Image (cartoon, rainbow, N blue to C red; front, side, top):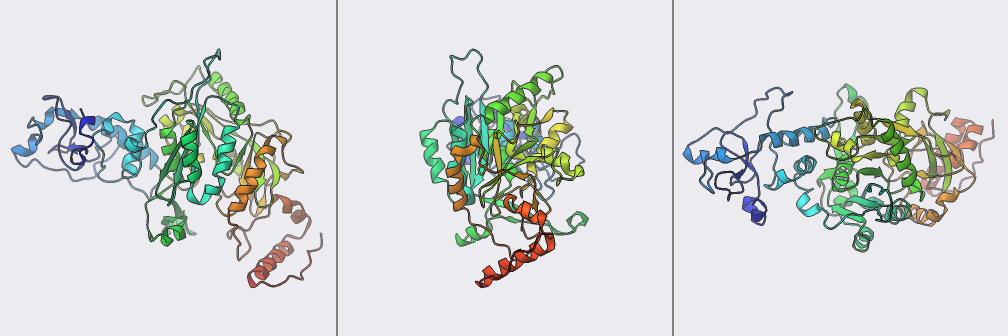
Length: 512
């Protein structure tokens, strides 16, 4: 009934009746899809909320109490208040720590929204319709395990948010996915920026395992000045301002990394969700190795699973992440190995955050996300998500890979477009450098080098952690053997000379 009115834009929006109650199809005449209007809804008050005195319409005569389309009494239309309360609860979860992003006062939802998941409806409202399941829904069958297998493995959905400035990494991301020996799997890519990725548009047509969606929005950036915790004003901007200004759009709509992850998971069909970062390297056995560890966690927690009325997936909530991994400096293709629990540069009081705060290696059941979404924030959305899971008593287990001699993935660092900031203690790279490329990642190196060459490098005009100046893996040993201050002074002079296009006659500082 509702779908039959979908083509008529004047009749697509859900509306409230004269008392502010959201109404759906008419139960009396069974022909009317909903109250006519242009989407005037009001968030219902949740049980734990204090009355805020939000305006509600007042009855103004007989016509307002009857549907102007079917002339049936308004109360004969389906009451959607409980459904809208669930949508609001989900939206509040997404914005729980985004104090600078309040909920829209009046949500605007189409008539078909009650047929969506509550997450899809919440994302539609929060993005003001930019994410629209009617346009973004995945059509056609999803990947399945081979029928010849005795015990079919669950579908793993690899989710990867990306953007226009990172398009040079798209071939690397696709190659890492294709080389995985786990089956069945799918890759869900949520892309933002002024133009879609030509590479992934082509691959989505050729490979049914690729779900690619582009949204013409900017990547948001939150600037926190010194003293922001004491009330200093924060500013919300976009990270690629110059690109949009060149297109004549100074203030486009912007999305956080958290929203992009939520959209990707909403589009995913797998019972298992795995994070891939577009600039990292994943060995062919990565998904299989991680799934085996996640399965062990599920077996140990099956006697006391976390339950919720909002969990629809078959698997109970459980999550894993790596507590050691390989490193890659894309500037000079140096590899390293990082062990959070044993690295001397990681302060003991920070090791907990380092164990759970690196989202590139997250793998979890979909029920985790049904229980609590990824926060709508610009950074640290990954550890905030895992922290919420731990508060809900979900088993979140850091697992250790085989070691430095066998790589399952490598977390890369490059100054221009990294969102995490890399594994640094102050200005010094953590981990230890390795003498050669891990054998498991060797086939990915041509694409990694190609991607690194496509990323413009940043030259800092000052020295120090705040300016982004860092000691890489290849420089670390020499730095630790030399006087730190002299080394920084030497690098400062090099940058100044590059800026002035002069020739350096400075010699390297003598070892301590």
